[in-house]
Length: 348
Ligand code: KG4
Ligand code: ZN
Image (tube, rainbow, N blue to C red; front, side, top):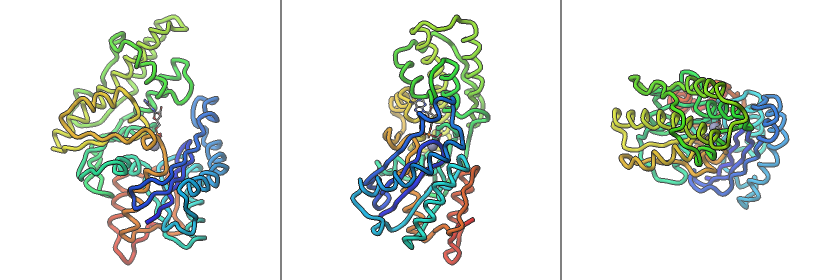
């Protein structure tokens, strides 16, 4: 099956062509970072407007790069939610229009489902596995029993890890989104320079909290003269990153042990973080899978694993499919799989 996939949940407009839910023929991403950077964060109305401009362009590029025409596409898959509603609506509307015009099936999938299944594009991973979804909006731990069967076992009670990275970067005078810049600074900084808290590390269960680390960084910054010396800034970034990474790593590993899961997937934008990749890779105890950088950050190809599976099962979305700004992943998966063959339709 040749799938055209579309992603527009936040500030990246992306289209991809993927064969059989496995071979990525193209994965075009148009980033709006430069547009939002001047405001220090994503401006929803601007995001929607720019998706509108970029959507036809990325679709055209994705088809060209894959060397296929629209007539050869067998199905359309789009991010239905969660995300910014205006942004999502652009992708969902484009997907519906294409499905109607080409008379091919459409399926709307969950953004985080895309992230945590992305490593299946590059590896053969047996189910079940534990998935740590770490992005700008999520820090969630799921047991992935199968495509569509997701059990949430922990989540952040306040900021997502990516959000904490971005807020700390902003406090340090770095531009939005600051996660990757903190990562770069941390690589040359002394992680022992400051001792930031490791919130909820000792708590039973698998919830997270990152606002305390962020506040500790702010308190530390207030005690120091700005601008910071380069080595102090790097030390601050390294100490902050070490705190976040330790909590993510230790809690995830503990969950894998308690639930006797041999395989771990770490996915979402923060999975690009070199400190996080290092600790998991070094752990050696478990099989750990990170998507490659292109498949970590928001992109359309990651949707193809779920899209291919659902379409092969005859699970499709109606042309009245609606975008959802909030949509729990467990619920999304259950909605897909619970449907009877005659009513396999998830519109509206
Ligand atoms: O998955 P993603 O591209 O978009 C959302 O679904 O949110 O994740 C974006 C987040 C941002 O907060 C960004 O700062 C963070 O991922 N990020 C990083 C790194 N690269 C991106 N955080 C830490 N280290 C990185 N190298
Ligand atoms: Zn994402």
